[in-house]
Amino acid sequence: MLTPGTYGGISAVCLGTADFMGRFSSQKIDHHNALLGMLIAGSLAMTVWLATTVGFPSLQGLSIGLILINGISTTVMTLLLYLGLARGPVSVVAPIVAAHPVLVVVYYAVLNTVLPPNLQLVAIAVTIAGTLLVAWKAPETPSDLAKAPVANALSTTILIATGSSCAYAVLIIAGQAAAEHHGQFHTLWLGRLVSLSFLLLLFLARRRAPNIPYKWWPFLTMQGLLDAGGYIALFAGGIGSGKEIVTVVAGTFGAVTVLLAWVILREKIARLQWLGIILVFAGVMVLSGNG
Image (cartoon, rainbow, N blue to C red; front, side, top):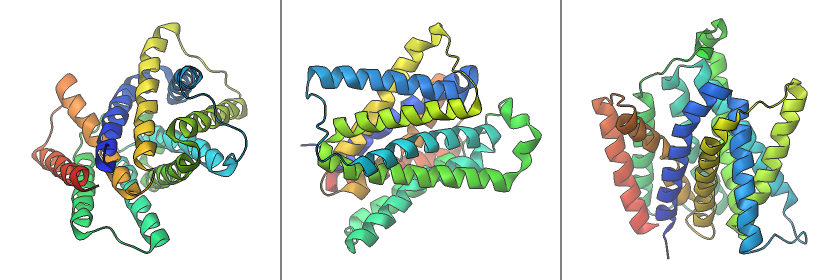
């Protein structure tokens, strides 16, 4: 039986890798198209999985509200995240978005009126501090979009990043609540369908047709599978107790992305970033053993 901390670690690896891949797809085919391709690939894979294994969810007792909230907030979170990173600076956007576990922990603490044990509280604080440190010291990678004059409006960028962080917390809370009724696979599948439908409505509102080159579909398929796997682990670890633990550990996906950039792209990592990575994995180890 995996602990919530272990589920969170699996989620962090999958989501961090998917985000690393998202850097390339977003730059080449636009973040709207990249998200659309990823959602289509993930939704199709989940449909095949459900059809051949556990079957499709029953419409009776469907938590429509939670599914809608999860799906819409997933689209909003991802689009705001990509927009914020495009505007820059990354050193401002990334820490704000990475702080979303704090909102989730506070929500569950208020809801249950019970704080986690002291050791877990310390591990949570260490993990969040490490994640923020990694994001804060990450080298900026300017894009063509970031060169626009509007990129200088720092207050607007902070507002966008804050919105992404809040949406991230909402999708996790709604997804974990829905998973208790429908299971992680059905919850993710239903949420993905809502997210995909909402994104298509955004394309319609923007009066722009999707444009995804054929050569990018294999890449987007792998990105979608990793993204879906990350959320499955996140929702699976959130069933029962330990919701705040799996949320915090899964929130370390930013450290995974930085490590991949260091190994594959040979990006430099500052000493404070290494300290943050050490803090992240130290906190994860404690949470995995006590979650």
